Image 1: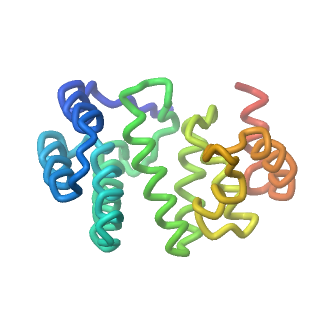
Image 2: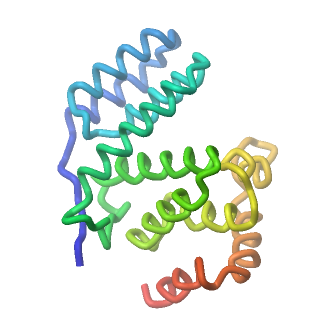
Image 3: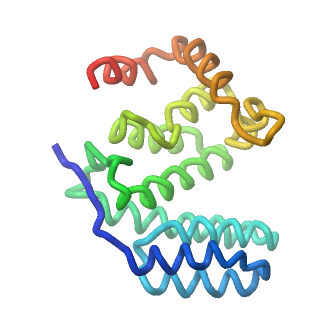
Length: 195
C-alpha cells in the first residue's frame, strides 16, 4: 500500500495565515502577496486556491482557472509515485490537507466545465484514499450522478437560511440517492462498514 504524508510546511503556512488574517481588501495587493507566498513554496497549495478566488473577484476567469490547473499539476506531481495515486492520502495528517483541498478544487472546476468523467475520477480517487471523506467527495460524486452541473448548484440545493449547508438534509439525500449508483459508490459503503 502506498501512503502519502507531506512534509511540514510551517513557515509558508504561517505566511499564508498571516495574509488571511490581514484581511487584505485590495485585490491587486492580495494577488501580489499570494504570488509571493507561492514563490516561497510552490508545493503549498492553499495560496493557489485563494489566488484563484481573487482572480474570479477581478473577473479574470482564465487566470483563475490557470492557477488552479497549475496547482493541481504540481499536487499530482508531488503525490504520484510510479504512476500511482496514493492508496492513502489521509486528512488526519494536517500536512496533507492543502493537497486534498487543491485536488478537490480542481475536481470542482472540471465538474463546472462539463468534464464530468475527469471530475468523477478525481473525486473517486480522493474518496478511496481517504474513506473518512472529511472534504465531502462522496457528496460531489452522487451530485454529479444525479445531474447537478456544479458545486454551486449543490450548495444552492442544500444551503440553509444562515448560509451554511444543511448537513441533515444532505445526509438524508445522500443515503437515498447513493443507493441508485451501486457501481459508482457502493464500494464506499462496503469500505465504510470495514473501517
